[in-house]
Image (tube, rainbow, N blue to C red; front, side, top):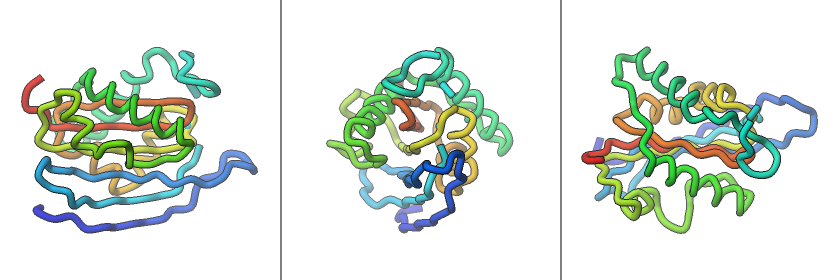
Length: 183
């Protein structure tokens, strides 16, 4: 595809407690280095059980990234896609963006720099990038199910990538997927 269109879909939030407020997950679909046009898909999110302190509040087990990677690769296998591997620079990028979201108390794809620039600044030689973000989920399993149930997010999970990186702070989550040309 040479151009991307905007497709916004709202899905009611699954309530886990009476006073949980609705929030919106937004996903940035594949971006080529020379392209600034993107497709976004949105949905209000349920809530994210974490034993390593990710920040204040919720925590994640020490192996949460491996758990997420296993779930990502399970979905990729179902559609005949090769497994992705964790890439430390993508983990750094996802973690930094998740921290940014936590700090501003807003789930967003916007950061101080665009997604492609964030990757390039870390020395990642990429040909495609995608990002999933979410808020309010308490576990890896729950946030993954939310992304799997959303067509745009699912597309990123099973998309054109050979590496991935993940971030979590409290109940803010990020996934980055990339086709990396050289590690």
